[in-house]
Amino acid sequence: MDVKRAGPRRPYHHGNLKAALLDAAERVLARDGLAGLTLRAAAREAGVSHAAPRHAVGDLSGLLAELAARGFDRLRARMEAEAGAGVHGLGRCYVDFARGNPDLFRLMFRHERLESGRPALVAARRALLETLGRSMAREEAGGDARLAMLAAWAQAHGLAMLLLDRQLPPELASDDVVGPLLGTDAVHPR
Amino acid sequence: MDVKRAGPRRPYHHGNLKAALLDAAERVLARDGLAGLTLRAAAREAGVSHAAPRHAVGDLSGLLAELAARGFDRLRARMEAEAGAGVHGLGRCYVDFARGNPDLFRLMFRHERLESGRPALVAARRALLETLGRSMAREEAGGDARLAMLAAWAQAHGLAMLLLDRQLPPELASDDVVGPLLGTDAVHPR
DNA sequence: ACCTGAACACCGTTCAAGT
DNA sequence: ACCTGAACACCGTTCAAGT
Image (cartoon, rainbow over all chains, first blue to last red; front, side, top):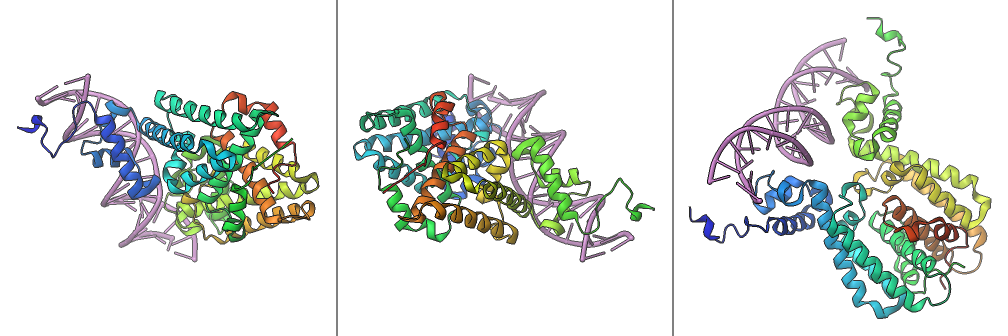
């Protein structure tokens, strides 16, 4: 009955269940992959009952959306840091992030599983988009900036997805093909 | 007991349960989407017990792999028909297929859920790759054919995925941006 | 307000048993 | 050989009940 004094065994249970749940979910994601990330598993990892998440994040799509928002925030931070490296720097950064956080990256774009209206997700996506737009505009003064941006984004995203999904045969996945693709000014459709 | 005479109510149950199951799975996919396509739902739709698929396709990843193989076959057939249309024709064809069969397209690249060693899937993927390679080689005589192919593929694939996953803001998803991207010689990294 | 525990309707997979 | 039905361990979600 001295539990309420916040003994070391139960660090949360007050108002920060949401944050604790998200941390727990990230641990599950790292340990068991996207397939192993269930609402019950996250609750278990956080040390609460399987019905507790309801108040904190709604349902599973709410939890995943919050997690995706964290992912977009992190990706944006990296892109921001790389802002001076030009378009190839951004592309490389994007693909590196995907390869370094495959499950999180996949989750971020699994639109069917995300509560798309979640404020955190909407905001994080918009922030990333703004960062991308600013970085592109700096280089691509002439021509259609939107077209240049879409072309570069699509190429980086497609490469990331094809790599994560193991769709590339060895000849195409080798560094002497992927490297040059990332190391150029990408895509100049006219 | 006249069931064995193949009355109209049970068209299969002989040796073609596999084909019947795949047809049923496609119906479920069209009706309930990828999320609704379960092994039990496919068995139900095919009119067999939920344990029957085991002999026909192994487990769920086997069923999905066989379905993905059908998808790759269909995509290859379309690409083959469009072979004369140049790289932009291929890109447009690829994206059109994705938009026209969103659930099937997503399934084809959901590598975690597919039994990757399934002969049908391996063969279908290789056939598509060969078709792509042949089509590209025809135009891209000079330069690195592998690089040109990866660049074009990544761009088309990324665009398709970003569209299906609803990641593009209205300014980028509009036809006057997507259209031009698909209507050029794509991507010429050097 | 926030969390628990039981309950419900689903899963995938296994396995003895039927034909 | 091929299929069924029961069983098991999981899900997500709901809801009365506790504090």
